[in-house]
Image 1 (spheres, rainbow, N blue to C red):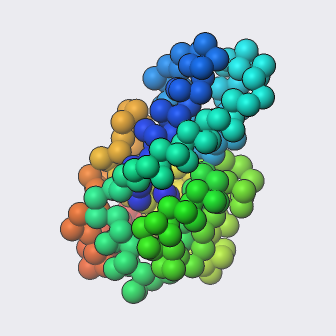
Image 2 (image 1 turned 180 degrees about the horizontal axis):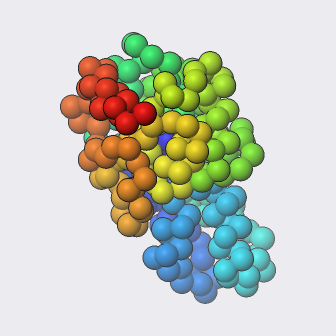
Length: 215
C-alpha cells in the first residue's frame, strides 16, 4: 500500500475532501473519513455522493478536491518513519509491488519524489484494477505480475479495507499503526507494527517465521 503505509497522506486526502464539501455547504463526519480511508478516490466519491446527493449539483467538486490534494502533498509529503529505508533494503532480496487506490499519476510522482520507484517491479493505481479495496483485485493482479503465489507474499497495510483486500488475496498482512487516525479496525491483520523504523530483510524473515507458524 502507499497512502498511510509508505507516506502519511490519508489525513491530507480527508482534509481535501472536507474543504471541497465545505465549499458546497456540507460538513463531512468522522465516520465518512473512516469509511473512505483505503479506498479508491472514485469509491470515496461514490459513497459521499450517495450520502450527500446535493453535492452532485457541482460538477467541479471532484476536480477541485483532487487539485487540493495534489497541491498539499507537493507542498509537504509526510513519510511514514523508516518506510524508504525498508523499501531500499527489501528490494535487494525480493520483488516488490505497490497496490494503491490513488491515481497512477500521484503514485508515480510520490515514488519518484522518494527516489524509490525503480525498486518496484509492479505499480498498480486506481486505473489498473477493477474493484476498489476491500475487494482483492489489486493484490491478485500484483501477485500475477510478480509471479508470486499468495502464501509467499506479505502485504503492509493501514486500513481495514486494505487489510481485508490483502487477506482475501491470500496474503499475510502486517498493519501499520502510526497512521491509524480514524479508528480503522486492524484486528484482522496477522501482525501489527507502529512504523518501519528498525525493519530490515532480516526482521522480515523473522516475521515471516512467526506468521508461517499458523499457516
